[in-house]
Image 1: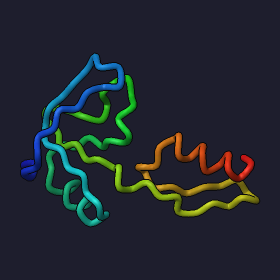
Image 2: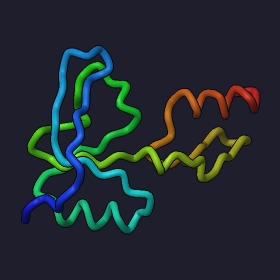
Image 3: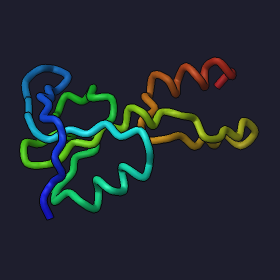
Image 4: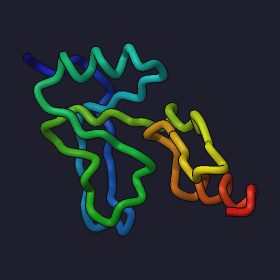
Length: 102
C-alpha cells in the first residue's frame, strides 16, 4: 500500500530541535481515520504536538492529527473514572477536573 495523497506539512518538536516534513491529514470523522489507517503504509498519530521529542511525525509516514477528537465522553464523579477522546489535551482535562473539585 502507498500513503494517500495529503498535504505535506512541516512539523517541529516543542523545543524546536527536531523536525519532519511529510504527508499530513486532519480528519474530522472516525471513518476517515479508519481509511487512513488502512490505506497508509506507515502512520504517526499526532496529539497537541507539545512533546520535546518529535514522536508524532515522520518524513516517511502519514501524520494523522487528532485535534478534532477532543471531547470528554463520560465522567463518573463518584468512581473517579473519565473517558475521553484521544485529542483532549492534558490542560483541558485538568481544567475540567479542577472545575469539579478534583
